[in-house]
Structure formats: C-alpha cells, structure tokens
Image (cartoon, rainbow, N blue to C red; front, top):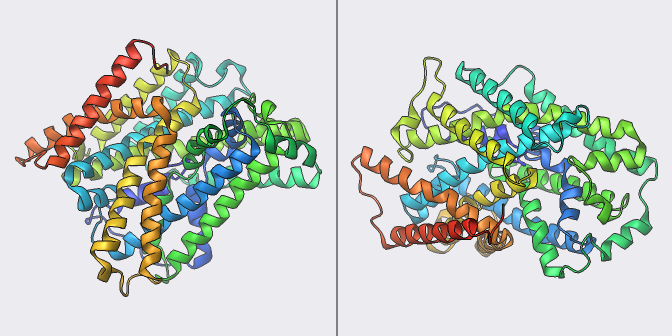
Length: 502
C-alpha cells in the first residue's frame, strides 16, 4: 500500500470499493497499454526516491542488494500471480485481500488479515508524513529530518484537512492523479537519464560497492535480510493490480498487463538502485538525508537535481496522502459493512463519507505522529512497520491459494492457463517468501507487530457480540489468540526493560 505505497492509493481504494457488492464496478474500457501504465502508476510511490539511501543504511554491499532484489523479484512475482489467479478462480470473494484468509482459515484469521491491512495503510500515512517533511526541509530547514515538532504540526494540519475534505465527499481533487503521476515519474526518468547522459556513472565506484557496504563487518546473510523489508515496501500494493481487472477491454489482457507492469516496475527500481551505486560509495549513500535520490542527483548534476527530486516528492506525497486518507477509512468501513469490524465503523454522514473510520483512523495516525517526537523513529522505521503489518494478509492469501491448488484442482480449468504444477509452485513460493520476510523483519519488527495485532482481538470479539455470533470457536483461533497475546506480553517486557529500543 505503497509504497509504498507510497503507493497505491487508487489501487487500494479500488480494491476496497470493490469489496462491497452494492458498489457498481466500472465498465471495461482499458486496453493492454493503459492497463500496464495504470498498474505501474499504482505501484511506484515515494519509496523509489529513498531506495538508494535505505539500502546503503542497512550496511548491505552491492552484491547483497542484488541478491535481495533477486529474491524479492521472484517472491513478488509469485504473489502477483497468486492474486491474479485468485481473482479469476474465486471471483465470488469480493471482500478484498482479507476474504481469502477468511475463506481459507476461518473468520478470525480473516479479521486479522483485514486488521493488518488497515493498520498497514494508516502507517503508510505516518511514514509519508516523515518523508514529505524531510523533502520540505530542503526548502525550509525548520523541518529538520521530517520527524521534529514543526514536522508533526505540519503533518497533523495536512491529515486533518484531508479528513475534512473526505468527510465532505471529496475523494479526489480534480487533477490529483495527474499531478501525482507527473511528479513521480518525471523526476525519476530525468534523474536516470541525467546520470547516463552526463556520464556520471563510475564503474570503479560501482565495482567497489559490489564488495563493500557501509558496514563491512556485517555477515552477508544479514546484509541481504536488512534489504528485504525495503524491497517489499516498494512493492506494497501489488495486490491491488488485479483490482482494475473489471476495467479491461479483454479479460485475458489482465494477466499480461500485470506481469508486464511488474517487470517494468522492477526495472525502474533496479536502475535507480544500481545507478546510484555507480555515483557514490555506499558509505556516503547511507548518510544521505531522505529522499536519498535527491542527494544522489545533486552529487551527479548539481543543485537542480536535488530541487527536482525534492519538489517531485512533495507534490507526489501531498497527493498520495489524500489517497491514503480515503483508503485507510474505506478499508475498515468496507470490513464493517461485511460484518468483519464493529458496526460503528459502517456509519456514514449525510455526504456518504465513512465518518467514524475517518476520525478513528486519523486519531491513531496522530498518536503515531506524536510518538515519533519521543523516539528515534524515522520514515524507515514506519515503512518497515507498515510493510510488516501487511505480511500476514500476504501470507494468508498465498497459503489459501497454495491450499486450493491441491484441494480444488478442478477450479483452475477454464479460468487460468498454464499447468497446475506451475500454479502450485507460485503458491508455495509465495508462502515461503512471506515467511522469509517475517523473519527478515527482525525481533523489533515482530515485537511491534504483535503489539499492534493484540488490540484487534478486542475489536473482533466486540463485533461478534454485536451481531450475536459465536467467536473463537476453533482450536486454531484459540491458538492464534494465545500466540498474539504471549508475544505482546513478551514484547512489552522487552520494551519496558530496554532490551528492545524503538
């Protein structure tokens, strides 16, 4: 959710909107070219501007970074194919990414998938706030690194202004999508072209970076794992690529468009990542303030490069944060409509806006923004947490898909092409990749994720009682609750004793 979301407000909003059978779906009309460009626009977000610095800051060498990209390239492709196949095989599951978890493993895990998706989306807003103010700091130094008091005040004003707009029924300001797209892609392509055209790529620097990272003493495997959360962050929202399938002129174009878009996006990320390593040593890249690409271009072509990137980031995120205000309110609203969240979340005002989820979501965002003042937490910290929260929805979706490749092989006939064994491989690799990402998130990531999932148990029981429905019936449900609560208690102890520092 992008970047990533930075990402993919529109995709995720489309996905959320399509969750309700009462909401009319847009009619088909997009050819394969427009499908490809739409998906690319939805996936590429703010994370691409910070890639170079984030990867270097983790201490990874160029070889480790390339290894991480290779793993994520395969893993994300498997997830892409998983969501594409599920949209074709199980079109009746209209509840978004969490409906797959519910269908495969019961409504409690389905709820947790919805909960994780929501928290991930609102954490995107928090991370965007830090990155936005970090970019503004280039023009207005008062914002520091984007996490100080002026930054929190500015971000708070912006997000509550967006709440006001959305509460009035304004989901997209005229031209917002066009501004986001132009402000993202023009700086990226100008930057890539400038480095190549002005011959600022130094093969000697690149080869030195391949073997030596910012932390030479870090074991290779740790270097790879430190880069993994960055690579998944810039792909968050990939699940939304299939949400636009209803807009395609030809149904068979959806799969092709999704794969082509994925390859294009991966190519953009690799170019930014690799070219940056040919401009500056990784030890210097690691010290760049966000957005790091601005520092890379300033080093390569001068001040105009930094102005271009920082200006592009500001315009892109101002628009993207409006999209995420919509997404992070629509997502729990749709979940409540489907009986997954408490009934209050389904309330709307006279304009039809989900006012309860709007306000509750922004209160949670505000709490995180204020917490940012009293910790060393940065943009990277919050996007890692956001990416971590969406891992459960990804894992459960991949696990459900892997399950039906074995239990419902007949469901594939006439719905998707290719041998069944290939789809089984996609499903199994998607599960393995999701587990690997959970491991790569580390002790701090898993600690915080358990604390963020724990309050969801109260929401789940509350919602079930409201509807006079049974809850936590199965042994699996009880085991999951026990795991979450035990992990949360251990996490609190670690935090309070200072063994884990935020």
